[in-house]
Image (cartoon, rainbow, N blue to C red; front, side, top):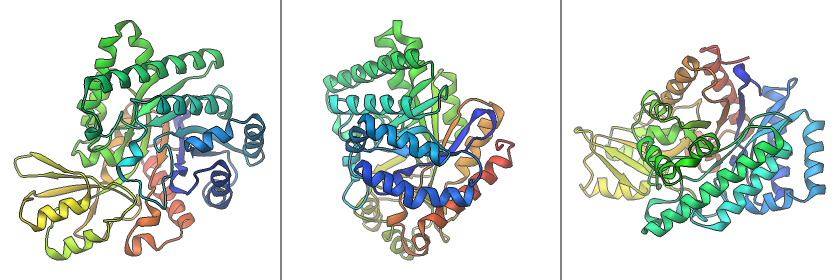
Length: 391
């Protein structure tokens, strides 16, 4: 939906199953339109589209694309952003670290992302700014050579040039958002700034182009897991001239009580589909990282982990904090919106991205997804309204 300052809010449809285009469209019909009837029945409704590589190829067929454009027009819906992070399956099977493959060292990632821009420049309303989000380069332990980093920078540079050409041809502002995430090649705001600055240093003549077409998809969950405040992390990007391409409104788990009963509750968040990285902080502010929650729990119970607090990359509902002593990092979202209120126009693309509905434990996962999404909209719109960022 359209908000103040030509901003747009949607929920990301990566929360639904859909590896093929027919499955994706079925999910839009089955779930997205029902949510629309509850939260925005009369005004144009924004969709944050997720397309796998196979679905993107199918949608690229001219007849299929024209049919989808008609589908959007008939329902008074529009697409302003595409999630291009997961390349393949994202539900119902082991995803874990494989979600980062193929990474930006590969031609497959480059061609997939180009396809997404080819699609969104034809799908988004004429003249509207449009974005695509993508992986933060790669997973850290996948990268062990300078040659990989060189290939990554070259592919991203090629992508930026491709986006620039499309923008010039269409007269619309197109941009790619790299999404920092725990244990990835660049996970903190500082690492992200360093990576992008190194790209600019390698091609100083392309500085303006790179800053115009490459930016950050700021995921509130991810930066909160890194113990970075919204003011600190967004401020670092702003100071370095890095574009905030899109903002994911998302929340993580945090915990500072490590009794056995709490650890048993955390076991409910250990599941076989997604990676749940843990960043542990001790009293001296030092950080230790675990690739998944089960590894952190094993370290805790063996006495190897003595941290005072954990932040856990498990997207939980925005509107529903877990039972104490587990907590939510949803306060990070308020901090993000405070920065946006102080600097209108800093970012115009917002997505709610709680993609873990199918694996939420206990009563958190017992509510039907359309009800959950409607409640997320209510919570989020309330946060926007309290800062005069709504309509």
